Image (tube, rainbow, N blue to C red; front, side, top):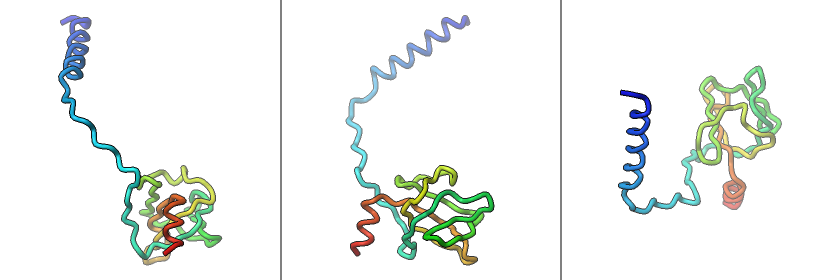
Amino acid sequence: MPASSIASAIVSSIVTAIIESPSTPVPPVPAVIERNIPDGAVLGKLAGPPDMMGNVTIDDKVFMASPGLQIRDEMNLLMFPTLVGHDVPVRYQLDPMGGVWRIWLMTPAEVAALKSR
C-alpha cells in the first residue's frame, strides 16, 4: 500500500472521529483543588531548591532531604526539586530521621486560610 494511501486513510479516520464525536458538554474544572495535606505538616518558607549535598533550608533551618523526598506544586502535582523557586511558602513533613520527606508549595489563599485558623 503506498504511503499516500496510508496517510489518506489516517486523515479520513481522524476527520470521521471528530465529526462523529458526542456533543456532550465537558464538565468544568473546579476553580479550587482541595488537597489532603496532613494536619501535622508545618508551615514554613522554603529558601530554594535542595543544594548539591541534598540539604533543604526552611525558615533558616537546614534539613537533610529524605531519599524519598516529594515536592508537590500548587496543583498537587509532583515536581522536580530544581524547579522550586526561592522564598516559597510551603508546608512540610519530616521523616523519623529528621529529614524532609514531603513538601507542598502553598498558594497565598491557602496560607491566609491557615493563619486565620
